[in-house]
Every structure is written in C-alpha cells, then in structure tokens.
Image (tube, rainbow, N blue to C red; front, side, top):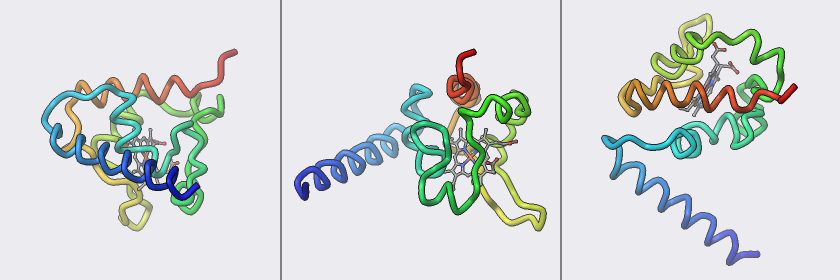
Length: 117
Ligand code: HEC
C-alpha cells in the first residue's frame, strides 16, 4: 500500500516535471487535461475531487450541463479563467500555459465526457 502511494506520488512528480520542462511545446489534450484540469474537474470530468466538490463544479458527464455549455464558453473559461460575481478567481486563466491549438483540443476533450445517446 505504502509503496503504491509512493510510486503514485513519484509519477505525479514526474508528470509535473515533464509539464514544466515542456511548457512551450504542444501537448496532447489528454496530457493537458491530466496535468492542468484533473485536480479540480477530475479525470472523469465529474468534478468530484476534494477541490472540485468544494468549488461545486459542474458534471461534464451530464448531458444537460453539456447542452448548456457553448464551445465559446469553454474556450473563454480556459483562456481567461472563471471569476465569481465579486471578481474573485475561481479558475485561473491558462492563456500563459496553453496555446490556442491546445485550448481548442481541450474543448473537444471536454465534449468527450458527454454521455453517448
Ligand atoms: C482550481 C480548480 C480548477 C482548475 C485547475 C480548472 N478549473 Fe475549470 N473551473 C473551475 C471552476 C471553479 C469553474 C466554475 C464552476 C463550474 O463551471 O463548474 C470552472 C469552470 C470550467 C468550465 C465551464 C465554464 C462555463 O462557462 O460554464 C470549463 C469548460 C472548464 N472549467 C474547463 C477547465 C479546463 C479545460 C481546465 C484545465 C486546463 C480547468 N478547467 C482547470 C475550477 C478549475
């Protein structure tokens, strides 16, 4: 058990190191999601991580949530971040970390959580 935890933590560390060293290079949407978004939105997009629950994130596997979300909203959230009505940051801007192409790929990635009809 302990060893598994250690290995898991080491892999997270390695992933982070890789991300930092490749900040300028284009990464795949799944890598970008894993490295930048899962902390809050969860690997499954349900937003059920400890942070996600606290922030009351939307569930991207919910068809209603997907239907209410426009592609432009997704681009805007990733590019500019999300603030609450008092202007307090809820999600940071990823403009400095991700290229336009990477953000576009992430939109498609977020759409993949949509349940298949
Ligand atoms: C610090 C936690 C956090 C991280 C990290 C984070 N988000 Fe968010 N995200 C939020 C919060 C808070 C909201 C606003 C509540 C909501 O819409 O569920 C949000 C909203 C969104 C929205 C919906 C915007 C809308 O108009 O409804 C999208 C899409 C999104 N995030 C995508 C991403 C992507 C892609 C990443 C990674 C590049 C990411 N988020 C990283 C916290 C986070």
